Length: 558
Image (tube, rainbow, N blue to C red; front, side, top):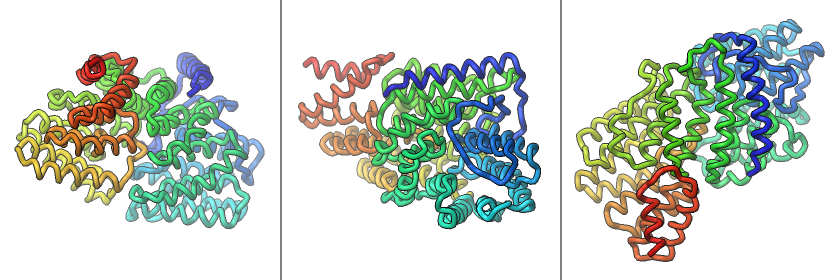
């Protein structure tokens, strides 16, 4: 990967942001939580590098230019400045309905997760304004009607149902206006939003790719095209097809933090850890620099937290535990954070990863939700990440009573997600519950039950996919099953579990080590040597002394 030119552009924009932060007060703008990735207004130069967007509307020429910038910001999920841009369009041409469409789109926030009620209410106001003005052309009215479908009956209809209504409306828009570039791009996004995590044929993703790949050749600087191609291919079996878009996106829109982050979705799927670290570090710096000058020093930006979760995952695969500990300390000092679920998930998952990826089971007991006064009851799936780490840690150190206490809490969080009709996250927490139960059974000497439970968890995980909010499972189920089989002295059965895990989550520290150890114990010296060599190559720049590294060195020396 050649990130040098990319990071040069990033440094330029970071300097600009820091200059503006030091010289021009950037005032906080009240935004509904889910639509606010950073939570503040941003001073944005009209010529900012956001990519090339040309979305013709029936408004004044001045309004058209501003509208294009708003759509470019929207495509890079830079929602607060996108909203400000669309508001400026309204000031420039009060007869124009399309900026209200843009505001309603922006209020949805990251579209894979349900939008909180306050943001939905604000978005519905924009929809109502757009409908009242009406589109000046049938095409503009079709866009307005499509976003209206996403908001219709939001108080009683769940996010998935409304997203599918939006997808159908966008499909019709493309059919009616087949030459409309933006219609195709937003339809591809809709296909990604509604893609089923249990559909292993990747039907929606295939449709989206068939739309976007030709468009990338025709419009190589369009931020939405490359952004949504990355999401389209953010799956183990598809990731290689997203590499060109990943390498391109950050250089197209270096002024948007999310554009700097998104390449790491593909880098993570391919096990390119150093590349993920670099692009996420750049994104986090730009995102955090966007805070107003009077922001409290213990405030974290949601995008930066998301970036750091991906960085944490990568550091731990490289056994750079010192760098990972620095991130743990940073989030431990956070007293407030902008945004909603994405921030909450990162705050809970990062300390959980730090424990689990180092096998530091004793440390799991001290994990606590931070900041403690955050509305954690709104994010049971985020809390579950930390509870899972505590429960697994307790079971693996033999503290069955503590593990059962955490298991009970996981059941409560699962029930809360079921009550909220969140099928995806209730399913993820069910997998975590089964895994903790398996290791409790092992601690109690119920070996057959432990094996069956872990096999069930692995089969459950095979039927689903990770959510875009996370770089990967806190502990891949097949990897965890391999470790349990090693604990049962079944190395020959453990080896294929580690190998299967590596097919899904490649180049992981515990994937290489587990396969090497299982092969060693099974008497397969050649396979053990190959995997130990891969492990030592992976951790060539480790900053910690993990015993597994020493074990690999000793085995190869012998």
